[in-house]
Structure formats: structure tokens, C-alpha cells
Image 1 (cartoon, rainbow, N blue to C red):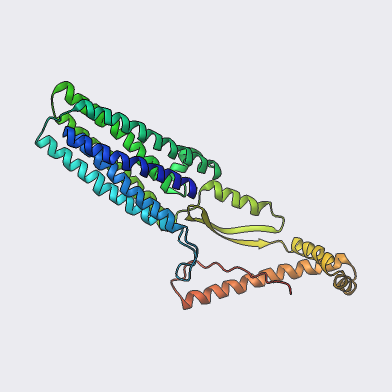
Image 2: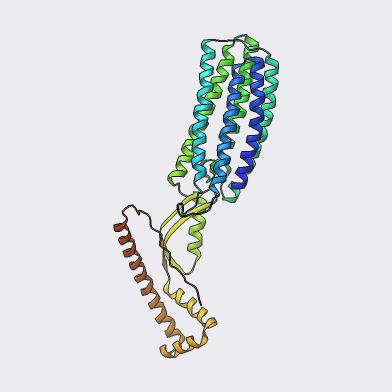
Length: 345
């Protein structure tokens, strides 16, 4: 979804940058509080989507010595910064301006021109909204999730942020135009000021939602249930795996999941596979072992018992090693130890 979120963010930046200029010009010509709020709204969206694009770019950096698991979660940092910006810059300024308009109402000029600008804005915001919807549907299908599930639980909040911002912008434009129209009909400038406050409330709601989403990801949210189910299915279908415990899957980035599980291997199946592999690789050694055990069946029985004991012993040694690590480094709460299969000479 990384490339999809990039498309959605770039499309939104282009549209909102253009609308920022148009709406500010519209405000200067009309003096409409709703138009100024929408101009601030578009400027806020442009700036914050620029932060989202920066986050997407930086999250693509690979692992380093200082960040061994990569920088996948950095996009959530910038997403959180973006949400805070929406709250204070977008929500705060527009509500302040709306309240000021209620206390000191001033009738706008050139309302017809302002409504035309709102119409253009609605068309452009609708286009970027459709782009975001399309990209989220693609990502949701790839993750085996519904559109709504991806909005709530998807691993990439960037396209979701664009979707919510553009949805809020589209709704804000419509409501602002309605309030400006009411000012034209009633002659009461407070309708225009109320439109500014409504836009601010919408922005604040979107910002708070995004703050919670990004914070959740930064803390370490569990991978989507559909992904965990597929992971568990792979293990359950393996004849080599007898049982699994302690399965944990967390979102590491928009395109990565960190997965940990304790596996009890089937000694008999392990022995059978080893004998088949040895027959193809070193039949002479296999023949010598069969003679020593009496037959291949006896060899399989011996290897199965040996494999079970070896797996049990290895598990005990790993547990002891983890205990010693925690004594030496008490902050090591989660330890993943993998067996190095080595390589043949």
C-alpha cells in the first residue's frame, strides 16, 4: 500500500495547494468568514499532507545499526505530527475566526463568486477523495479486509488520513457553501461565521481520530485478524508442526509485520523428512546407519525418539538462554531467538 498511499497523498497535495490559492483570493474578494476558513483548511491539508509524504519517504529506509528493524513506523510519527497540525492550525484557527465572526458579524461581498469557488473546490476535493477510496480498496483487498475494516485497523494510516481529510474537506465545502447561501438569503452574516465554526469542528474530529490511530500504531498494534489467521493456518497445515503457543504478530510498518511464535515440532515427521533428504544426498551414509540399526524402520524409530528429545532439550536450553539474557538486560522483555540452519560446504 506504500505506493498507493503515495499516489493519494500526492494527488491531495496538488489539489489542496491549488485550492489554497483560489480560496484565499476568494476571501480577499468576498470577505467571507467561511471562505477564509476553507482557505485555512486547504492550507492546513497541504502542509499536513506534505508531512505525510515525508513520513512515507523516510519509512522506506532499510535497517541500520541504530534501527535494526528499519524505519517502517516513522510514517506513524509524521502522521501523528500531521494530526496535531490539523487540530491546532486547521481546527483552532477556523473556530477562532468563526467565533470572532459571531461576535463581530460582517456581511461578505461577491457571494456569487465565492459560491463558484466552492463549486470548483467540491469538484477537486471529490476527485482526490475518489483517488483515496480507490487506493484503500486496493490495499484492503490485498490484506483480505473489507473497506471499513481497513479504515479501522489497516496498517497504513496515510491513505486513510487523506481519505478522512478529503472527506472532511468535501463536507466542509458543502456546509460552508450552504451557510454562505443562508447569509445571502437572510442577510444575516452570522450564518457565514457559523459555517467557519462547523468546518473547524469537522477538522478537529478528523485530527483526534488520526491521533488515536497513529498512537495505536506507534505503541505496537496487533496485526489484522485476517493476517494472523493466515499465519496460523500455514502452521496448522504443516505436518512438521505439532502445536504452537505464544503467537504474536504486530504491525512493524505499512508493508511489514513482525511475527513470533513458539513451535513444537513432530519428531517422527522430522525424522522421516531427514531420512528422505539423506537418501537423496548421501545414500552411502544412510545405508551404513540402516545396517547399524537393523533396518530403515528401526532407524526411523531411533531418529524420531532422538528428534523429540533433541527438540525438548533445545527448547530447554533456549529458555535458559533467555533467562540469562533477562538477568543481564532486565529491559529485554521480548526475545526472539532463531536457530541458524547454517550452510553446507
